[in-house]
Amino acid sequence: MEKLYGKQLEIMATKARLLGLDAVHTAASGHIGGSLSAMDILTTLYFNVMQVDPANPQDPDRDRFVLSKGHCTPALYPVLSLRGFFPQEDLKLFRSIKGHYSGHPDMRHVKGVDMSTGSLGQGISAAVGMALAGKLAKKDYRVYALLGDGEIAEGQVWEAAMSAAKYHLDNLCAVVDVNGLQIDGATKDVMPSEPLDQKFAAFNWNVIHVDGHDYDALIAAFEAAAACKGKPTVLIAKTTKGKGVSFMENNAGWHGKAPNDEQYAQAKAEVEAKLAELEGK
Image 1 (cartoon, one colour):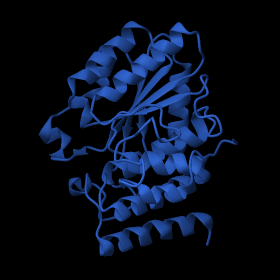
Image 2 (cartoon, one colour; image 1 turned 180 degrees about the horizontal axis):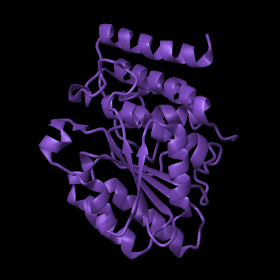
Image 3 (cartoon, one colour; image 1 turned 120 degrees about the vertical axis):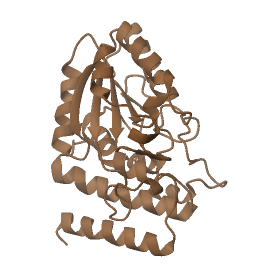
Image 4 (cartoon, helix red, strand yellow; image 1 turned 135 degrees about the vertical axis):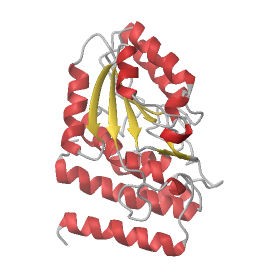
């Protein structure tokens, strides 16, 4: 696949936002706020950074991605479908008993999913295992993991961080989606996690700050991560919860609920208007 850049990535991410909104509204369930904040990160990974082949999703030499904040499948599934792993029509089965597109990633049934996740903190541990396996097998693949800033409160995250540093896993790149909000409110009030950069640095990680909605900056950050040798890298990605929908942005209430018909119509209209603007229509 030819890599996408800049405006091309923004168009793709906007399409993914529409699909995510559709899926959550149809299911009347799902975590839309943190999915919208992560959409640009995932789009950049799958359409510019990662070496993957939808025709051969189990390629042993492929790059791996682990959604450690596993509730954000309304971001992951749309991006996977746009990348060609499965038909977009399948997204209508999101959280439906009739399909396998559950609210958390399912590696057994959904093409393109490298790890089943959901229990916060466990995904990054799985990613560490994948990266260590790659080192032992002398493989060149890279492993990427996306965490939420609320998830950082899980102790297992730091056990994984310690292990990654011990084994010098420079083939591992974690991204923390720092939107500042979790289900119970602001992370600074629920369980303060800052200063994240100093904490990861103390665990001997390479730390890179990045705007999680700036495609050029994300590409540069992922390139810098790949160039770093001898230690794992973490991207501290500043984002906006609910990005792209005015009434969802920076609103913790949209962490894990679906829009009603009126709210969905407004959200869809806003994202469609953005897409039309980007495509010059």
